[in-house]
Length: 128
Image (cartoon, rainbow, N blue to C red; front, top):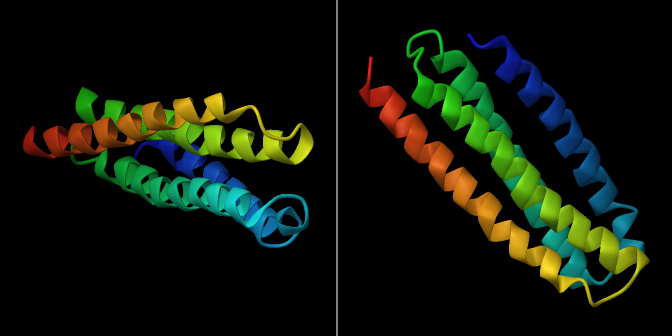
């Protein structure tokens, strides 16, 4: 198993729960329903990829290659860029107001990281 990815996944899972609770309770009073929906998308994709990171950590024992390591790196980068940009966009809407929609341009880069992570996982499983 890959201890670093297990630890990262554990912390990111805890953060997902905290962010989800914040979004479900406090955030609804601060921003529009659209902004809450954007925030919830970030939480959902973060949580999905926490599970992917746990899987990567467990598969590392059987498939210890650079592709599985890179899959984990891409998943972490995706969480930071995809979910992080959605969290930042929501925060800016709550504090500053509109006009910072350019932050949303970062989100697709995070999505590409997620896709690259899944492709790296596929390649890792084909190699031994």
